[in-house]
Image (cartoon, rainbow, N blue to C red; front, side, top):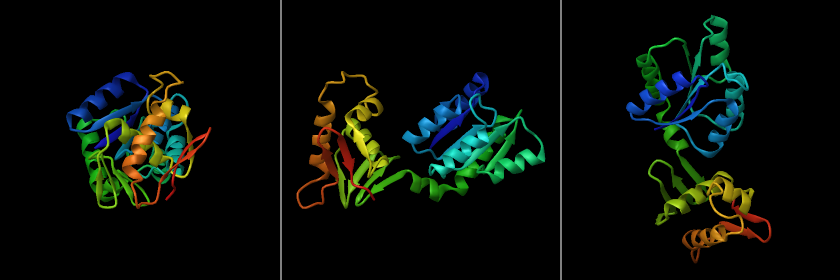
Length: 225
């Protein structure tokens, strides 16, 4: 399962991340709300661990922002704020559990397991992206359209994941170069066009409604849900 840990104290972040990884989780980390928001827009997480004392914004504001953007994964709040009022506020404004600092790592792991167990069906559903009859299983890294399993390369899968997350919206070549390829290639390359062509050949086969549309001079649109 994939978790997002939002913690700005390097020692705590490193220790918690290592402990979670040893427990079998995939862990992404962010030091502030801005980085956390960016990661949450690119990936689906089974659960989040959020410290309230972030350098750029209050953790509660971050949780509210993520909830408004559609993130439904359970959130375990970490905080040095120990009053009842603070705990109640955190739980009422989007948190699912609250753990005060200092804490025992065994308790954090137990609370996270409990949250994930309670939200297992929602978490499993959250790891699937669907656009019409196209479905991406993020855990198995498998794409299907209808009953057909699509034979995609790893890069094609990442590209399709980005298009699915932005279904119904125009994505430009520069956006794809930045978000899918990380601008590791020259901006005048035709790699985007080549991958879109190959992807369309596997998804929009004869007899099926085309899902990928090209807007000349602008970019691409994957049909909305």
